[in-house]
Image (cartoon, rainbow, N blue to C red; front, side, top):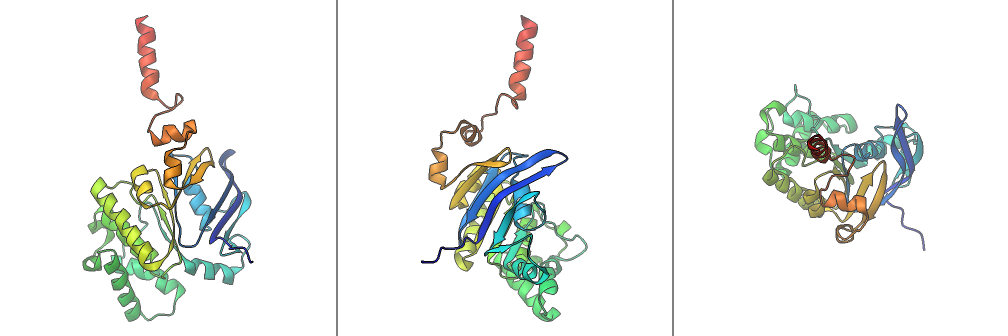
Length: 266
């Protein structure tokens, strides 16, 4: 029997900036149709990992394979085929401010297809309708709320009907109601189109709501990669601090300040 090739396979990934190790030998496999949520605090390496996974950052060592193809060894044609399979919604939306919402959604279609402008416009309308923004087609990004910009970015990521969707911090900067609505939208899109989802976030409520598996990063490596139920019961002290939202001794500024005051009083 032939072994099943993971949709995404990361092996031995290392990345440093100015001598600071951000990724420290990361291994990961994501199955087709799975929703994997990568959790971690600021500076844990999760966003760098995602940028490496989509080919925006070249690692110092290790490999990333999408459907068995090495992202960093692929030739131009192979890489173009891979990128047609992938969609990405960036943390801040990364919408072009001088272009309308519809024009932003049309960009991948103009880059990777030969569709005429009229057809691209129709596709943009369909994708924006999927995320509830059909009425905002001709607005500029500056005219949208934060949640609407996130949904517009998602519509653009869906423009090419990707098999794999990457979403960086979908709930960042959103109020709880808007964040919950975006989580629900992601689940509906996954069920409708059977896409593989990789989501980077530090929002635990969102992560547990949408994940098939959770991967918790700390200091450039994974502490645990498992189902939400298993992660919730994990007794690793670093995992527990993160899940219980308890600061470590090294980062608890309030505790240090209290100790300083106590020492003064003595």
